[in-house]
Amino acid sequence: MNFQVTVLKVLVSYPDGFAAMADLKRDMAILATSGRDWAERTKRLAARVPDLDIFSQGLIGRMNGGWRITDKGRAVLEIMEARPAPAPTTELPPICAVDEPTPATTLSPMPLIAPVRRIRERRRRQRDAVRRRRAIAS
Image 1 (spheres, one colour):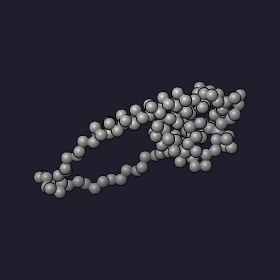
Image 2 (cartoon, one colour):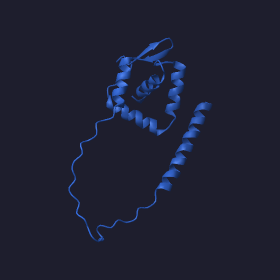
Image 3 (tube, rainbow, N blue to C red):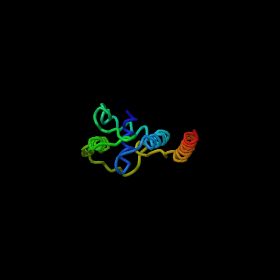
Image 4 (tube, one colour):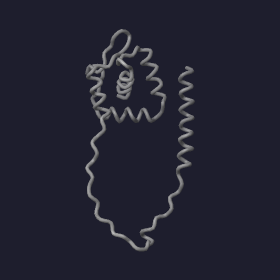
């Protein structure tokens, strides 16, 4: 399923919607090795159209050694990428003012987790860069 969403996204990125097989394979390899973000994004998009089949539904056409996205394929991709309507907001009850803080209303200081996130993110980026270099080298 993620493969099919990736094919649609790659084809729509080309000006005329046509990509030769070599270009399509190269772009898909780059996206496949780009990390978890791309995989999670394609899963979310695929979940919006659970019975997606780009070939039998006529979303792409095979021609001249490559694939071209059809108008129907562009429409399905727009449906997948459409943002859901925001949930209706409910009115919150009024808040009572407290003159002096009590032990129940005081908050404990929050630990600093930003440095840990930065380190974790830096390590993830380094791992992804190594994977990309290995994929390019092979």
